[in-house]
Length: 213
Image 1 (cartoon, rainbow, N blue to C red):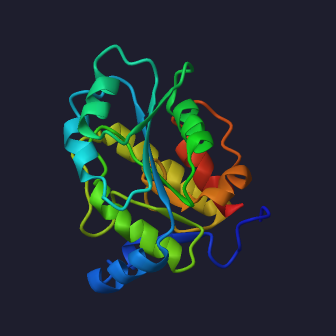
Image 2: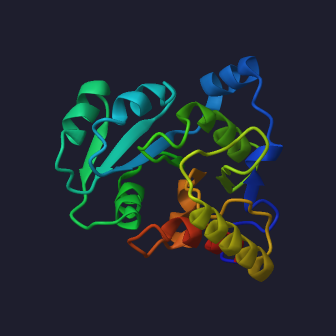
C-alpha cells in the first residue's frame, strides 16, 4: 500500500452509498463542505458542453476545462455557459495529459473527473463527495450496477472491459465492475500517491490499480 491511502478506506463502491439526505447535506455544506474541483478534459466538445456545464452543481469550488487544442468553439462555449470556468490549454494530446494538467491546476480539496461527452451525470457527484466525506479515499462509478447503464458501448468494448476488470480483480483484489469508466473522485492530497504519469485513456485504469496497491 502506498503511503497516503489507508488500507481500510481506499475505495468506496458507489452502488453501496445511499444518496445523502438533502437537509443533512445542506447543513454540512454550510458548515464544512470540502472545496470540490471538477476537471473536464475537452477536445471539440462545443456541442456537448451546453448539456454538461449547467448540470455541474452550484456548490462546485471550481470547474477546470482542460482543452487539447480543439478546432471548434469549445473554449468560447465553455466561457459563455459558465463565466467562472477556469480554462487550461494543454499542448499534449491525450486524456491522461489533460487530466494531469487539471490535477496541477486544481485548488480544491476533492477532485472529480468528468467527461464532456454526456456519458456522466454531474448531479451524481453529490454521492461521490458524500462517500469521500464519510471516510473513503477514492470513489469510482460504474455503468454495470443496478440502475446504471450505457447505450454507446460495442460488444467488443464491453467484453474487453469485463476481461480487464476481472484480470485486475484477480491480480490486485477489489470489487470493480467497470474498470474503464472514468467517473472518479478522490482527495486532492492523493495526487502524488496515485502518480498519474501516462498521457492516454489508460490513466483511468492506472488510477484504480494504484489506489489498490
